[in-house]
Image: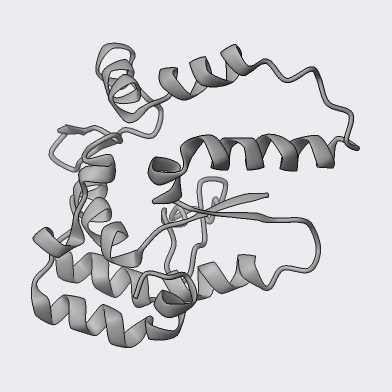
Length: 179
């Protein structure tokens, strides 16, 4: 698996946009050990149910996994070290395939990075749609690609919420270099 971990303070603001949550509701959802991305249907159908747990438990479940290989990537590194990170991903996938790699094509690699930058993906969603877009209860379409790396929790969260997140996830924030 490739696990992309993101600073929980930025996840809250992203959740608020994507799901039309209030800050407080998104904060509580991140603390909820029983949190899910969707609800079980009243008829018991769980085919669209995705359990995630709290931010901390979700992260630790992937970090402590001993069943299969997991490549950890910090979301922020996709901006700051994109070429290095994408080469890590390629190497990880190649190793899963038994180390048999195709000839590395630098031009295709650079083109892949350019074509998947945030602005291009946002434009593609606007022009062609995107499966992860969300329709709010009032029928409004909410785009998946919103702020991307411009999502700055420092500017968007109230200080008391920053303090509560820092206290609740202190160990993980330090471990991941977010604090």
